[in-house]
Image (cartoon, rainbow, N blue to C red):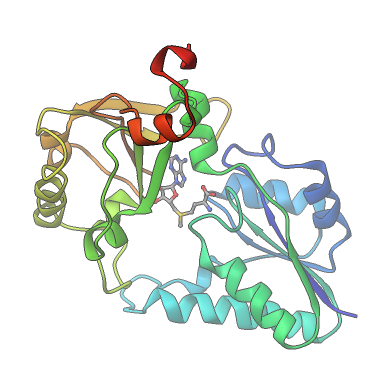
Length: 263
Ligand code: SAM
C-alpha cells in the first residue's frame, strides 16, 4: 500500500540528516524534494534514482502565482504517487514541519485518503541559530513567529525572552505571490517593534551555512538599521531580550519560597 514519509534534510548539506531519514530516502519508490540548492538535490540523487524537485511548482520567471496554489500542486503530485501504491518520500530542507506547510498538508490529505503518512523531525534553521549564536533558548525562553503573521496579528512579544522572526525578507508581503518585500514594509515592522524595543536595541540577522565550507552570517545591527541591510530568503531575525527576567512574587508566595531559595 502507498505511504508518505516527510523527512527533513537539515540545513547543512548531507550532515544534518538523521540515518532513519536517509534509509527512507534510499528505499522510497520516489523522492520529492524541496531543498535550498542544486548540491542537495545532487546529493539526494546519489541516494535514490527517482528524485523529483518540487521547485518547478513555484512561480517561474514572469509568472504570477499564489504560493498556496503551488503548495497544493506539490501535494497533488505526491498524492498521485501514493495513490499508485508507491512509497513516497517528501524531503524538505530543515525540519519538514517547521514553518513549512507542504508536509502538514500532504500528511493530512494522505491520511484522508486512507493511506499511512508520517513525519520525521529534522534540524531546523532555528536549531542551527541557537548553536551558532551560543544561546540556550531555555535560559529565558523564546517566541517564534513568521514575520508577516507577527505584523498582521496581535502578537505581543515578551521582551524578557528571545524573539525569532522567520521569513523576515517577506515581512508584510501578504499576497503570497512575491519572494521579497519593500523597504517601506520593513520600516513599518521596525516602527511596530519599537512599541516594545528601543530603536537602538541590538538585533541579529542570522543565516546558517548551507555548505560546510561556508560560515554563517551573524550580523549584529541596531533595530532601526533593519531597513539598511540586505535581507535574503534565508535570513532569520533574532531579537534578544531587552529586559531581565522578572520574578512572579505571587507565585513565589503560593509556593512558599523566597528569592534566595532560587539560588
Ligand atoms: N522548514 C525550514 C526549517 O526547518 O528551518 C524553514 C522553512 S521557512 C519556509 C523559510 C525560513 O526559514 C526563511 O525565511 C528563514 O527565516 C528560515 N531559514 C531557512 N534557511 C535558513 C538559513 N540557512 N539560515 C537561517 N534561517 C533560515
